[in-house]
Amino acid sequence: MSSSSSSANQVKASHVLIKHQGSRRKASWKDPEGRIISNTTKESAISQLKAFRDQIANGDAKFEDIASRYSDCSSAKRGGDLGPFGRGQMQKPFEEAAFALKVGEISDIVETDSGVHIIKRTC
Image (cartoon, rainbow, N blue to C red; front, side, top):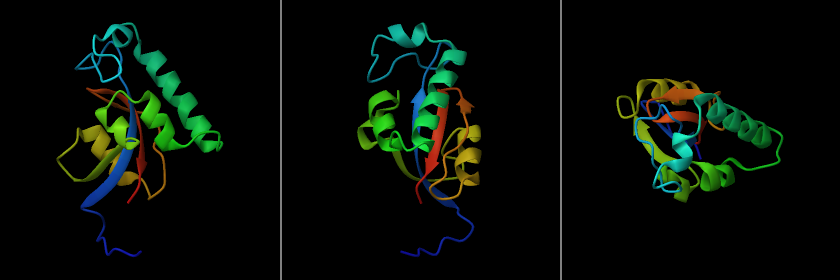
């Protein structure tokens, strides 16, 4: 499947989002009242993501499964899949990380107003 993507003006990516006290919106599909999120520090959110990233890297877990169970984004229903997006559609740090990845690669921790993420480029 070779799609001719000139140096990617669009990427397709999945992510795991963990919200925390500093997140812009302190509620999610799995925490509608925001009780857990309001008690989650940014440091704790980052350490959760680092543990998830290690589990995925070690082959102990699949990215999609982690996203489905733990991501605070509604994309969790699709295994974290955000579909294709171009530049200017996502928050800047997220966009820059997604575009910098090779297909199949997983980012380090990315911080946005929404919370902290790990991103997997899928296309």
